Image (spheres, rainbow over the protein chains, first blue to last red):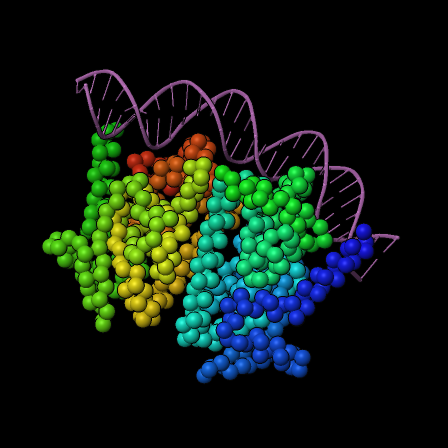
Length: 263
Length: 263
DNA sequence: CGCTTCATTGATCAATCTCAACTCGCGTGG
DNA sequence: CCACGCGAGTTGAGATTGATCAATGAAGCG
């Protein structure tokens, strides 16, 4: 038992190694800049605060690491930096005055922390690390200049904004019109799909990294942690999925999909 | 009694007259194009399908009217047109297979029907008229060209996209973490605020046009029409607001705000 | 070892839904 | 002019979903 867990842990650690995280970069919105590859080669030598020449422009970036539960970006602060997640999971979250919280979206490697930060200093939501997170920040003014002068980058950026809006709209429908089971199943399937698109998962379905705690699921689906626990127990009892060691296995993908789409 | 109603009705009709609707145009995202003013002058003569020269570019537009409950734009269809609401209220809405529905946002005069339509033919949600709606459509390719070559227009467009995303995020929080009373109160106050910003309301608060049916409120807040009825009755009983003749009066604005913000 | 976070489970409660009946106003067609 | 049907809103009774409260145990960590 503890042997299996140790093995799982070792694998998880290797997933976060630099070698593995390169896989995410092609999905990154600034991939075309070649900033990250260049930076990675320089990484061993000078640790942070690099500047790179892209065509005619200079772009400054720096690399950061945040431990799980650390807030990367605070809603009420002003930011001149534009962060992009390189490794690990994070969540953009709104805190209410009674200390309840709502997760607006889960950020995976390659995701921009907030598209709004390209236009101004207000991120309009906080971002919190779920696992340990590695991320790069760029200077807004410089990145903005570059994105707006490179049509291919601009296309990619606007496409990402549209996708983000589409996912927000989907979440509205989920929260407004679906049951607890449907919401949870759809959250999981959406994450699996997004991970799949980034070439991160071996086979499309079957198994995935799943570092979310039940309270993250609760915050993302507008439910209570204890109700999440009950629903997940039921999924388990019905042989749909299995979650253990921060990893999720689909046992009956078809059935699970059916459950998520229904209504 | 019926005399008062007749008077209210007459006023409503006058609200929809061309003279009144000009007030909305300064809030319209294509106001800088001067397209609408020019078109309005030509309106009496040639009814539709006009072309106007803006700087070096030609832009084609046409004017439409949709009766209440008519679908203006269908999620699954492809559109080459980019519609903007000029008068009346509409809603962007997602229909589920069990024929329940979720309203993503209420469209007021000056609102773009879907920002996504500037980038491609898929609106990713349907749009339905709430009242009778007047709207103009532009050719996507032409409008896109013009928006991307006029920096002031582009700024306005991107600001609108951010605002839209911000409102979507707020709705996610409302649906995920707030009670029925809070959701309904916030919907109403948000509408009042948006109308106020467009210089449409005489005084900021006090009274506003309110053409929403209770089932619209239900679809926007993820509730049931009968529960909406009960909550509104309670608001009335507590002397917070009064709704009649498609118009809403704030009787205790401070109290109503308190109710909406709490949590 | 003791602390904290996380997850599970049962009992009870509250918010909201569902169903049903009824009213009202409006438009339509006989 | 009236009968009718329809959409909208109201109200009550009962069912259901998910929240709250509380107790417990397991795992990770200094």
